[in-house]
Amino acid sequence: MLALSAPAFAADGQGTADQTPKSKGSSESVAVKAPIVSSQGDDLVKPQTVTKESQQATALNSSRDGAYVRQTAESYWTSERMANATPIESAEQIADAQAQAAAGDSIKPMDEGKAAPEQVVAKPMAPTANASATKAETADGRVTNYSQTNGKVFFRNATNGKDYVCSGSSVTSSSKRLVITAGHCVHGGGKNGKWHQNWVFVPGYDRGKAPKGKFQAASLRAYKDWIDKGGNNSAVGFNSDVAFVTTHDGTSGGKVNEKVGGHGIIAGGSWTFGVDIFGYPANLDRGQAMKSCSSKTARAQMQSWYFYTVQGCNFEGGSSGGPWLQSYANGTGQGYVRSVTSHMLVGRNTIRGPYFDQRLAGLYKEADGSR
Image (cartoon, rainbow, N blue to C red):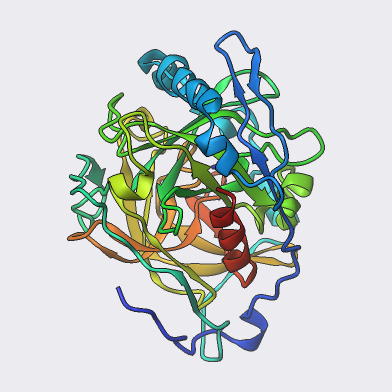
């Protein structure tokens, strides 16, 4: 993360009027054909913009692209490269506690009132074949099934040519190919930001093992607000720090939903909910095993923007993009994603994620159509 990773539900009636989020951010998003380079840094696939007229089906069905996918996922991402990749935020250190305080940071508890309407964007789905749990540890013992619906993300930073990691999860989609993560896990954000290269999702990653294969990105989609204004303590950028990735078939065959199922997605709703957060924080077991933290969310403010916040989860770099799940079921390994890990407050043991406002359904629909 950047430093400062069941049934439908009805609105619960919590929250005050001034806590109801408004979509001040732009709903516009941008998608590109996922860029791929060789181990020597030579361009194989450039980040060409995906439009309605150039649907990603071309990339998914192209044998030429397929060869590049295999070269990247199997040849580029060796066990050594995966082990040596580092959290993107460790190189950037975007925000710290002092900067946050100067920006008007605060945490406000909920009280009675009306919250934003809750919308079930997608419902969880089970994998076609059973996906076993990934062995991992939890601080509180609440989570017992570390579902392979969650996983680790690897990519090459086009700006400096170095390898980095994030977290992510498979989400239900008609294409059966979508992964959700943080915006900064697909694009550097801001003036000098570029689309990340050789992007791969490894569900259930565990100490170098890829039990369900590696899923190379076919296209990357993020809010334009993140692309234009991300990083540099930009609250408007962090407000849009979420992305969807359309993936190719895995290296062991099959679509990601078929292999590991998919979480549902909820947008809107109360600022407080019981949450299970998953990810691969590098400060715990060097990011080599999936971790979880079970807590309850609150509302935080940065400048004039609001975020979900959780205190007490010892998640640092590498956990960016990991899902914040409501109604996680140990039996099925699925839940509803309501946010993703975005940024942390240095020295406060606090992590935050963007509120999924009404723009999220559109972003999801556009991503699912880019296939």
